[in-house]
Picture 1: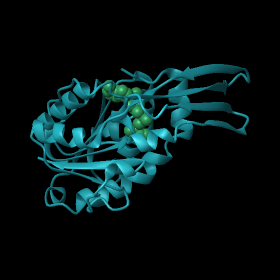
Picture 2: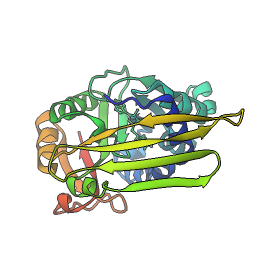
Picture 3: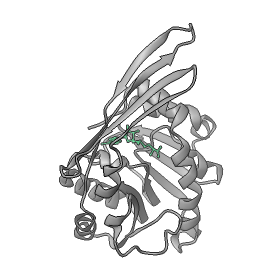
Picture 4: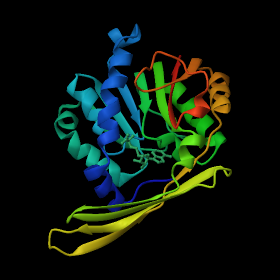
Length: 251
Ligand SMILES: C[S@@+](CC[C@H](N)C(=O)[O-])C[C@H]1O[C@@H](n2cnc3c(N)ncnc32)[C@H](O)[C@@H]1O
């Protein structure tokens, strides 16, 4: 279980929202072009993090529920979507993506930025597929880093681009085992000018794409396929050759 901690949630909200902002319009366009997407405007953002993807759907009139394990990420999501939370168009709940129930159903369930690689095993991923199936009326779209993609984690990146934070990211993956690790640490400047240290070491579980597809089919999902975010309608022949793939399944 990997609920992001307070310091990392701050950095994430500040620096790492770009991916969600980039993929949200593409996911929305795809969903809006499907038959169910014409009428059903309800979305579950699974592992919603700081809520940036949710905000895009909210701005376009969708109702959104965001679920995340981390109270700190959820606090930013609530702040970022404040007006929609206040009006009742959005709701954020704390929960585990592989063990949750909700009292409503959704036309679209999305999960982005390798969130489901954070689940510890194939069993946990399968349980997640079951939980989503129980609350879905339509599509389930999520992304995963592949083994090929995680091999690229082996590097060190230092972000000292301004005085408010100093962030060091170290990725470790041997290319063989079923976990890749990313150690993220650094210092954040507080309002009083002093710096506070933060550390977070999330892992990604490596899932074999064929097994992911089998698990989806076993649970009852129809027509699962792998695609690139730029073209969610076109299935890929060899997802393991991609660094990150989007998986599209329907009920
Ligand atoms: C890389 S962030 C992605 C956040 C957001 N989806 C985005 O695109 O920016 C991964 C998120 O997954 C959450 N998370 C990790 N394990 C989880 C679990 N088992 N259940 C729910 N959320 C989880 C973390 O707290 C974090 O907010």
